[in-house]
Image (cartoon, rainbow, N blue to C red; front, side, top):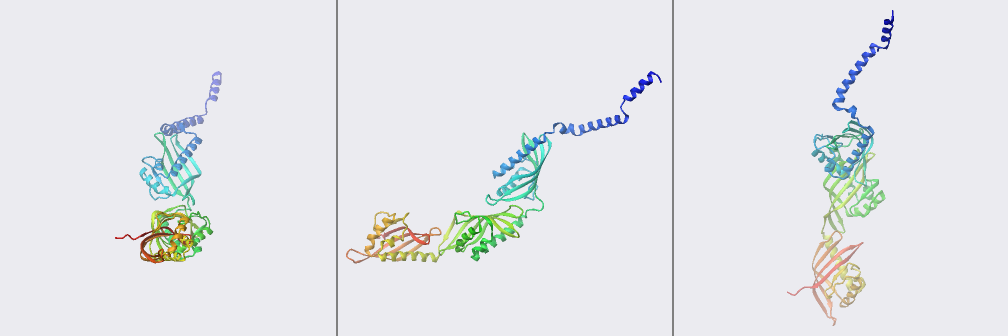
Length: 446
């Protein structure tokens, strides 16, 4: 073999193995194919953003969306979504929403639940520096501030930068399996049945029966109490008084919204028929109930009721006409005692307006009332109603007006009868009827 043979052997030993050469060619071809298929078209492999930075962006965007919910402005929330060509599958709607106008319409109703979301677990998967998928689990608190309810759900967002602003182009939200929300028909049916059960409990007149409709840790803001009631004893105390009015409620307008898998918000308008001291009254009021399942029973966790401004008109009854005449007779009997204190006690001490028949001044205090009757009672006055009319003023007051004949004695002790006109404003103070206004004048001579 000579020198040439030795050089050939050395050359052969430095050459790559044919198998390795083949693999290198194959790998290069595959890499080029990968670049052509992925790198050239999207350049994701070159421009892949830092995953930690993208997670920060995802949380900033979610927080912005959540803050938009808190504004309760449907247009503000809808503006977080692309203006067109979106795909939105909401938690509590059967509709597949594909444009911004329909998204806005969805949030018009959803925002009434006062939603606020908190992410409990999530994942961020970037597509490019300007788009990513954000998915995971969140818990939504819904309902009025005093009686919030939690809804556990799953979410998928696709966010994309459009003209430099992050927008949602896809959003899919669904209740966690095993905690499905009731259908709207089920909600409405439950609301109707539960309100009837509550109204029927009122008809029993039993405060404990009504209180049993509420949870033990309730938030109750009643129509005719300044108190925020938070427990069963408070509910019992309230209904001990309220049931004396023989209340009966009729819903005139309502809305029912899911507030979790076993809760719902029932709100709207109702009219209550009440009776107090012989006065029958219809009270138009607004209501919000949060009903929640406790075991197998529905209970009221939150109840807020308030009179509709200007919506309450008392109804005059024969009993109230008799009350007006009873009050006049009591006043008349007080005159006959000739005790100025007893007569003055029929009037309020403050906030009085008293325009007597034979006094040029308006009297407005107890000392002035006592001073007037100190003189007037010496005439042995006694009145007899000849014509009268009663007008209701709220649920605890009325104006009694008309004509009366007043018999008095003059300086010679001779009897003198005066035909006069009267107006009284009577109002309840505690359990007593008091005169807040009294205007008396001689009938003009025609």
